[in-house]
Length: 256
Image (cartoon, rainbow, N blue to C red; front, side, top):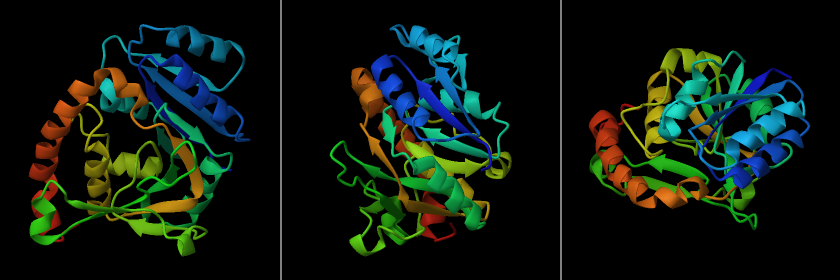
C-alpha cells in the first residue's frame, strides 16, 4: 500500500483530537504518518500529543507560533508532506476502520479523480450531506448555490460517485495534485468555502471530484469551532464573497 500522510489541524478540545487519533491507530494502516498541527492550543493538547509520540505512534507534531486557523494550519502541514497521498482531515472525525484504505485503493483506480471524499455520517451513522453539486447559470451566483444530497441506497456500495465538491473533514488528494494546484486559499479564514474553492481549482486543472461510498467516517460537526462560533459565522460571509468573485462567473458559464 502506498504511503499516506493524514493532516490534522487542531486547536484545544484535546479529548476530541485523542478520539480521532485512536480511530486512526486502530484502523490497521501500516505505511502512514499523522501530521498534527497544533494551532497554539491552551488546554492539554500539547501534553496529549507528546504522550502519543512517546508511545511510538507515527505522529509528527508541528506547533504554530501564532494562531493560523484551520486553513493556515493545514497549509503548514501540506508544505512538508512527502508522501504519495494526503488525507485532509478534521480533528472531530472518527474513521471507519477501512476508510483510508478504501480511499487510497479507489483513488489509484481512477486517474481522472483529483479529490476523493469519504462518505460522512453523524454519530448514529445517519448520512450527512454526502454529495454536493454546484448550480450553473444564474443560480450559480446565489447564496444557495449548491444541491446537496445523500448517497442513494442503490449506490451505497458503488466504487465511486462523481460530484462537484466534497467535505475536507476527510478527503484524499495526491502529491501530484498538490504540486499542480497548490495550497488552500489563505485569503479565506475560518474554514468556510476553502474546500469549494479548492475543488474548483482541481477541476480547472483537469481532474474530477468524487466520493467513495465505502469509505466512511463519523463527523462531530463544528466541535473545534464551538467556542468561536461568532467569528466562524462572520467569516462565512467574507469567504462567500471571495469564492463568488473567483469562481462565480466560471460556474455560471459552466467553464468548470
